[in-house]
Length: 429
View 1 (cartoon, rainbow, N blue to C red):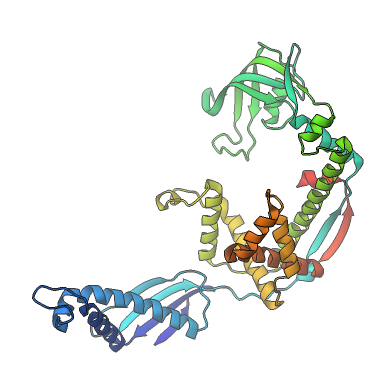
View 2: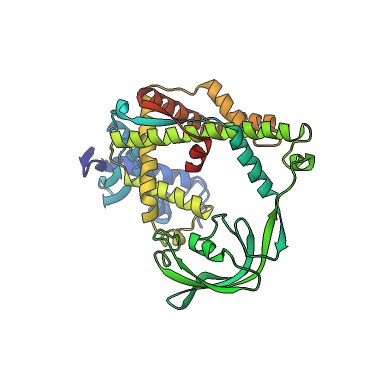
């Protein structure tokens, strides 16, 4: 007998009753099976009486049978009641007495009922940009800076110089963790240090000492320093100026261009920038579509799925599986909002795939496999490996299905193209 009670929008409490005869039959069957190989003093194998088997193995066998019966009857009840659990159940056995019916309660969450709507109300502003010659010039300069060398100069520092310094930072007169360094290279204008700190190094010369006042931003990653004022004592060892490489054959070879010189390098750089621009535009469009989809379709989220997503995000951040004793120490709040969005989007996109009966576009699948494999030394070999590995291929199929769902959404949304510069698209990204 099965009864189901709605505890909340998503939580269900299912009570299940299993006849005693079903349990006793399985216990007896399991004991007879054990008896075929049981070795007990005074009895030949296969000749141990049932009452002796029950005395020696009964409790253990009964526990195993009860566990299996609960698992199987739970699955049967879920199917019979047409329920879709969103996580594992919490099982509480309310009555486990030999010779009497087994009664237990399973509490669990179900997936929400979803009805997609409001897609025509989603507004998307799609950037439209070209890669200009000046953009290629800027990129070539960035490549030159990547290959730059540094030479000591006897003058005051200015961007984009590099200053090698010792520093010690204090908040309220106390040195803080991470506030001390020796012979640290700081590139002015690179934005790798706090703006106040970099600005305080402008004009410094070798052997100069000075104090720099810094205000940590309110959203600083080290929460104990966020919003605090600090004073850094700085000593400069040397000032170095960038020495950019010449745009010659050697420079081109450093980026894989053996023939054609700078003209070929510029063509390859432009092609790469065009690919990056396309990816950035698709990313911005998708982000707007996802935000619009969430805004137009508010749904209840199973806590079990959000918890699972938080666990994944924590593993992503900390680089692998987290021991249970450590997981309890990790903060959940910073992950909850993003985890909720991920779960909601997964459910909504899954519903679009289901209701629109989207199937994996095989041409898109081949393109995606080729795209992923292109980053390896032997793309053809990697592509074959992807296609022959069911687990990997399933992951790529899910990616393709998501792209198809995004394309479907784009066809329903109100899209307005906006002409912008290349750097505006990429910098904002």
